[in-house]
Image (cartoon, rainbow over all chains, first blue to last red; front, side, top):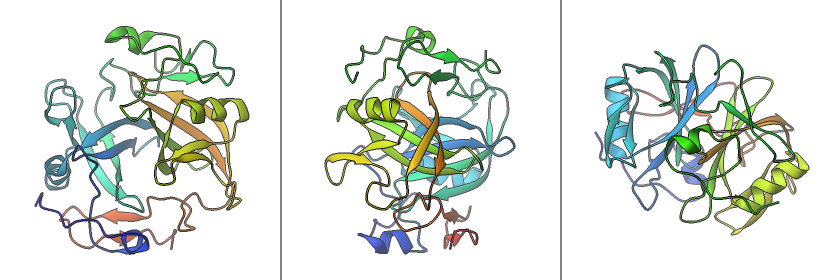
Length: 133
Length: 133
């Protein structure tokens, strides 16, 4: 199932009812993961065709680890799994949005979300979300 | 202000209170935009250092258009502006999360969000979010 048809061009890609993911030069598509219960954005990761197909087939969020160069079933070692409730794709099909039931922290630091630091508008010291440690 | 210090390595990057964005080989960082009122994820776009600095300075979401190769003040032509309420950055500082007050549709197709199509788990025809046309 990881043999997806190629993207179309222009508005045809925006309107097609076919899944035609647009992978980048490295063969990857961006994946935003959102907690289905809280609406919090948890992380941004990457998928190759195999990871996208595996996520759909298993309903467990599966990414491509760029640092390790391998398929990465989220939580396989940490136990912090993501049960995928819904998958969406954007207009030009170069990004997916996963709505998940998150077990444990989504971030490798152990925090609930990777977005635990707030950037002040004056660009000085980041502050931490007190709810995320 | 677009002269940011370089990223640190490993956990030092995860824990630093300094803004040290990690731009990719093209000089870009991913930006996820979320509606601050509804929690809906609206779009994924890209920023170079200048776009990130401009977003912080003006509090109007400003991206780098990869297709046009130029700075892109969201809504400058469409009027569909994004007033930035909060900016967050992720653990390794290669993605930012903007919480915005969105005027009009965030998507270039006119829809509220770019993520208007749902991918079924069996990979067949995408369905459309009925609330987004």
